Image 1: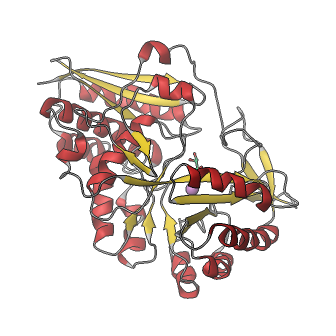
Image 2: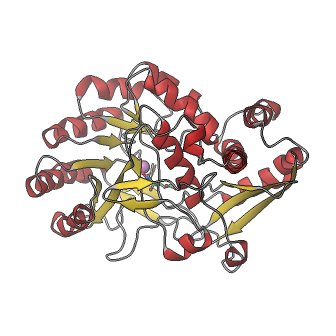
Length: 402
Ligand code: EZ4
Ligand code: CO
């Protein structure tokens, strides 16, 4: 069997998504997510100019060989654009393999290791008072884990907190919006809010928080220590992760578990963090870390070192990525938690899928392959819109991590 066609589909049902569809001579098709938030068209060009011509005529069954060919064959290894493009191909080939075998992809990965995939939801609000009903809504729906992000008095716009009633979507302007950041105000506010949340919801609800790269190691160490009484499941992206020794410093000071990796592309971004046991959860995901093939490699390394999975699952990862993530989550031995931000209804319509939420768990589709597709006619009704992520500046104007 040969690949006869590969199409790159760009659509904006509420937000931008890039999807690769690979078709075989027998008419079997597979889909892969290729969305890189704010840099979508770079991946489109990479796929159309440099990858699609290499796919035509290849055997779709040779997933590992195709992965190695695209990774080693480009000479320029790693990087978000390259690895997102490789991920899209890899994911689509797993979808095809499942359809040809007549099995859901998790069966090809070794079968189920658990009954469902535990997910966490996002509770966001400007104040602790407004947060409580938000968290309560998740608890009422059966969620066992909730990420809590709060506004900071004195700052008008912070990561993770949207306008009241709206779902949070940070890539909201053609050019980056600028927000003001103040670390001292943040470090003062977050432990107070978690004290209130624990007091309200008791010891059993799993709580998470995303620092979103905005602290230095010693600041993160202080935050981790001040949150210890509230027993977080994880503190995410405490510092930017280019300098990984920073995690060693945080580790020396706090037992608050650490999660990192949503911007990682390969196992080389986290092998030291994992093998030195400097983190507890690795947040790499299918679309940005080389597809199912490479993410499984990362999770296998993690399993040897007491590190569990905690895959990124924000709305800029399409339902195709979510479907693929769930098959892997169900199969691996060291699953931790899966992030889940439901997509807007128009995105769910463009990407018909069989995964479903029930009682705090997501369940992948039982249909052969990934159990997700793209409705290309509907997709064409939502043209691409340029959208950028914001930036942060300190009060004196210095550019800071967002
Ligand atoms: O800011 O996916 O944990 N989730 C996150 C996300 C990221 C976006 C960036 O595209 O940090 O909200
Ligand atoms: Co995050």
